[in-house]
Length: 115
Image (cartoon, rainbow, N blue to C red; front, side, top):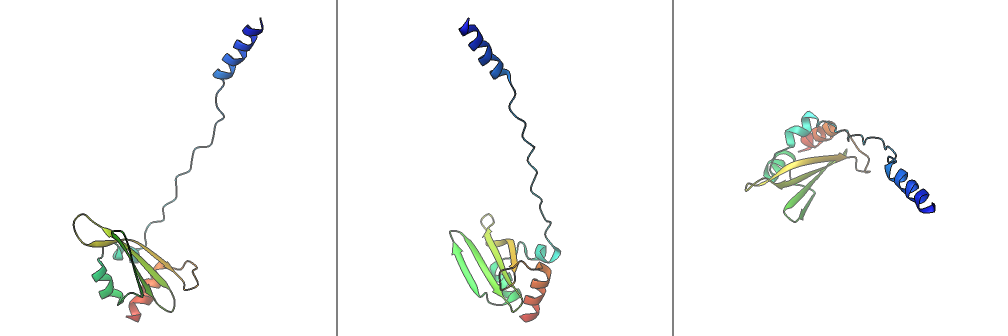
């Protein structure tokens, strides 16, 4: 009899549904601003022609980070290979010299007028 009760409990426990968890929310993607979109796809040469010589150049594997600095902001451009062609900008990050996020459009404009 005990075995029958134990088997019934195990059977009922196996039939119980798992607790429902809320569906994961998709990450919100902020659309690139027009100024940023204008820089996406440029080569390192294009960037140097646009902003002048970078303050910092970092190679990591087959990628490249170019950093352009102004009094108002810092712009990091990340370049990755695109097929068999040259490295191209795929991502831009801007911030104030203190490290706080800043407006991308304003930063790009400030760096353009500086050069």
